[in-house]
Length: 321
Image 1: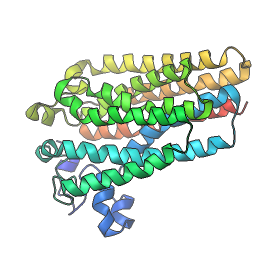
Image 2 (image 1 turned 90 degrees about the vertical axis):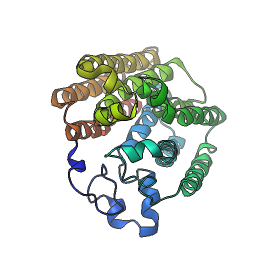
Image 3 (image 1 turned 135 degrees about the horizontal axis):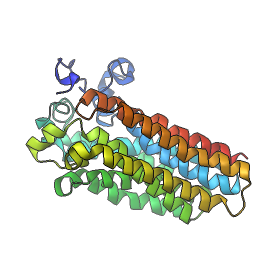
């Protein structure tokens, strides 16, 4: 049982959201249930969706240099990530409302707690997707096609834990799609480096979401929900090591393919700090992790914003050289 389950949750608030978050303190009261439905009170998910986008545009820019239009790609991806993460979470809560009502950590979410009806949730999801679509259609045609294709992954993900022990793989496929989209938004096409960067992100997602899933493994057993946390159990450390190595090597491979033909040693060296910085941070997380302590798992999971930012900053820096 997590610490949040041992104390009463203030009316309307969500048990696994950070206390004194901006939604609970500053948002208009009428908007709070909808913002909670979008996980606006828990920004880590937006970061984890956004960072692969920034990896993608930075890697593309490291090949051809930054352009003024890239500023809109960066800002548009930030807005799009916030909106589509919100829409995806809304869809997830619609499909999982019965499961959420049966799990201590999630029964305080807006739909099972009665703050929002299913019909209201559908309308809110459609509004977020509509605004995100306006951002998407400002990009080139390749990026638009990729963005539309990602909707299939978003639609399937909430059901993955019902039929596979690897729902984290489906999350990785969806959450890292932005690496492809943002690369194409800059370059006007897809290329092999973008694919390897995408695969690196999937391995990273398997790492952090396995940690996240260890919070709920006892409840997941009771309700019959599958996860890599349940699949790996005490072998989790070995699997996390595999995901760490894959993430580092695949990102390094993406950089080498992109830059070796023309980049000088300084640019290549700065870019290659990105995967090694990511890897060292993930190794640090593993040393701090206790898979039998839900509060520890949540805390380590949230550290992945910093891990992804390290990679984004060095890739962006290399593009200036």
